[in-house]
Image (cartoon, rainbow, N blue to C red):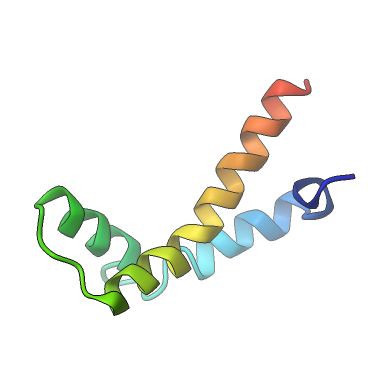
Length: 71
Protein backbone atom coordinates (compact mmCIF):
# COMPACT_ATOMS: atom_id res chain seq x y z
CA UNK A 1 0.00 0.00 0.00
CA UNK A 2 1.38 3.38 -0.95
CA UNK A 3 1.31 6.54 1.12
CA UNK A 4 -1.44 7.95 -1.11
CA UNK A 5 -3.58 4.90 -0.44
CA UNK A 6 -3.13 5.19 3.31
CA UNK A 7 -4.62 8.71 3.36
CA UNK A 8 -8.41 8.59 3.32
CA UNK A 9 -10.49 10.61 0.88
CA UNK A 10 -12.34 12.52 3.63
CA UNK A 11 -9.02 13.52 5.21
CA UNK A 12 -7.64 14.72 1.87
CA UNK A 13 -10.75 16.81 1.22
CA UNK A 14 -10.72 18.16 4.78
CA UNK A 15 -7.09 19.22 4.39
CA UNK A 16 -7.95 21.06 1.17
CA UNK A 17 -10.90 22.84 2.74
CA UNK A 18 -8.99 23.90 5.84
CA UNK A 19 -5.24 24.26 5.29
CA UNK A 20 -5.58 24.56 1.51
CA UNK A 21 -7.93 27.54 1.71
CA UNK A 22 -6.79 29.21 4.94
CA UNK A 23 -7.00 32.11 5.61
CA UNK A 24 -10.34 32.32 3.89
CA UNK A 25 -10.47 35.98 2.78
CA UNK A 26 -8.71 35.66 0.29
CA UNK A 27 -6.99 32.28 0.38
CA UNK A 28 -3.18 32.48 0.55
CA UNK A 29 -2.89 29.97 -2.25
CA UNK A 30 -4.94 32.15 -4.59
CA UNK A 31 -2.84 35.22 -3.71
CA UNK A 32 0.42 33.37 -4.40
CA UNK A 33 -0.85 31.97 -7.70
CA UNK A 34 -1.88 35.48 -8.76
CA UNK A 35 1.57 36.76 -7.84
CA UNK A 36 3.15 34.06 -10.02
CA UNK A 37 0.79 34.84 -12.91
CA UNK A 38 1.68 38.55 -12.68
CA UNK A 39 5.41 37.72 -12.62
CA UNK A 40 5.80 39.45 -9.27
CA UNK A 41 8.85 38.32 -7.31
CA UNK A 42 8.13 35.99 -4.44
CA UNK A 43 9.98 36.26 -1.15
CA UNK A 44 11.03 33.08 0.68
CA UNK A 45 7.97 33.34 2.96
CA UNK A 46 5.75 33.46 -0.14
CA UNK A 47 7.32 30.25 -1.45
CA UNK A 48 6.76 28.64 1.95
CA UNK A 49 3.11 29.75 1.92
CA UNK A 50 2.68 28.41 -1.60
CA UNK A 51 4.11 25.02 -0.59
CA UNK A 52 2.16 24.87 2.67
CA UNK A 53 -1.23 25.81 1.25
CA UNK A 54 -0.68 24.01 -2.05
CA UNK A 55 0.35 20.64 -0.57
CA UNK A 56 -3.20 19.48 0.27
CA UNK A 57 -4.36 20.29 -3.25
CA UNK A 58 -1.40 18.44 -4.74
CA UNK A 59 -2.19 15.46 -2.50
CA UNK A 60 -5.81 15.47 -3.67
CA UNK A 61 -4.79 15.72 -7.33
CA UNK A 62 -2.35 12.83 -6.93
CA UNK A 63 -5.03 10.71 -5.24
CA UNK A 64 -7.46 11.51 -8.06
CA UNK A 65 -4.87 10.60 -10.69
CA UNK A 66 -4.00 7.35 -8.92
CA UNK A 67 -7.68 6.49 -8.56
CA UNK A 68 -8.27 7.20 -12.26
CA UNK A 69 -5.33 5.10 -13.39
CA UNK A 70 -6.19 2.12 -11.20
CA UNK A 71 -9.87 2.13 -11.89
